Image (cartoon, rainbow, N blue to C red; front, side, top):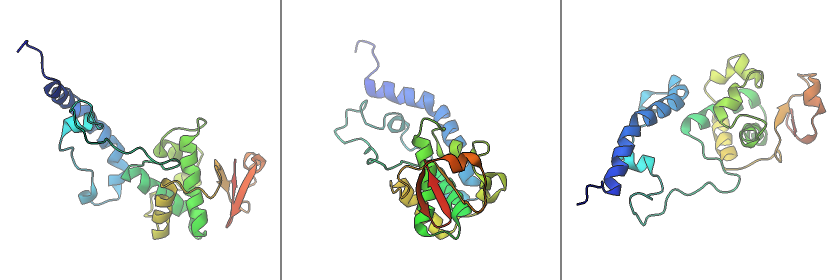
Length: 194
């Protein structure tokens, strides 16, 4: 041997060195999901750290295909983000038609994709002044079953709003900014705007 470390061993060493950082990132992302969930549903540890650091198998020489990219319009969300999205939908659109619940989820995800807003569900939801349900604490309540399904549909790419970035109940706000936005669609009691 010439003293060089084989690529697979090097990948494993690199992955093991990065494991503490991976754990910290995973722990930070999962904290909110653990607040109201049983510990049994907590994310599990990565069984192969090298695979976690090399999800496409480029370092292993594997012939197996890597992860499939999300389909157009589909959003790859962590379980914690999906749960947060369901709680926002439940708090904002409880009592609205199912299509309106999906629409509220779509607005959150449209913001994630927009350069005008933060790029994660958590950052969009908790941005100051954006969602009344954050200020009044209703976002912390368990979601209704239809909101969980609506979050899944929105994450799968369903968007009955046609790309709306805002929604509001006209009977409950006189906010000039919201009223000035171009109307995309009305669903239930909410106006969805661009």
